[in-house]
Length: 516
Image (tube, rainbow, N blue to C red; front, side):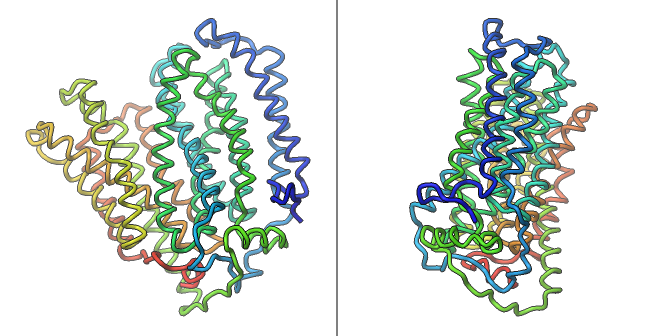
């Protein structure tokens, strides 16, 4: 049974001493890296090729011991067997109000998404200073985002699986532990060590997002689920990018680029402390015999035991529908990733090659990006009030229209108004599409597959980044028109596939969705 502290469930159960011992070892290990970093501030934060002092060596050893201890302590003793309670679901009734407990979960998961997004977003701010300090060419420095994006892709698949096998909160805890441990990336004196730590950092960042959507889908009141998933996910992503740029402007001038990695230490510790406000998925609690926590969830979140709706179709037909839907969502995620990482990533360089100044190119993109937040709010409204399926299809079609605009004649695109309009349509479509895609995936799969399915879609949304960074390493950098022409067909195919294989989730309970 799970232990209680002050009437509130503790973060972990019977292995709590092992978990906290591991966390303490990690925290002390990271802290022992800070004296060497502090000594380097007088030299502009340069630590390149400095020999590790004894404290740093001890710190690395403590992290190496603490990380597996904390992971072992966080895992429950028994894996959940979802088939054992296939006829029972735990869900809030449609009439359940949105309470302070729901709001607390939202705030914690929003914070988790922000610091999760900050990790890859910080790469762009870190690379110039890192390349100067290590004295490496730009082509060599490009291995850092390449390795990080591989890590996020792997993390999405891995943490989705862990969330299905051991629970949602456990998966978030493990991701947070890696947040803290990999913050020592900012104190590495050798570039190769940065690559290793950046891969692990990417793995932790990639694991958070799909699990957040999955947990939100399972504990939010049905009438609030749709808008919450889209709004909190979209604003979390935008908030992460804003937080990364704000941290760079505040920390980097005085403390150097390394401080942007080291900030993962305090933010990770804070997220770990806030994790006590996160519940576990109710069906996991039931399967593990944690009845006291189920009673607590009934009081706070309105979660009750409900018999599953009898499936009107055969299980084989349901499995076939899921395969078709998975294909559609994966194609959509892959298409999005290539537009986001392959077209928009190189857009500033492409605009400058077309004769725009660097300042003007940045201004054009910034003007278009101002539409990101209202786009997310509008997408959340459409998703919850109109149609989840057709909102996703609509954002894909909007992105498709932006790609078509990029294929206009050079004489037409030479007009600043036309160029801003094309980029704005692309940015609005891309932001709306990713804001809707993962919430839609989280709603469409049964408990035993929800984490893995959402992780698969999330991982697919990173594949384009890995591929594009790989192309860049060998000198294959796409132009705006060339990338748009290549991506037009797969984006159109994803719209058609979602329109055919997708289903409506708006206003439907998870138990109803699981049976169809």
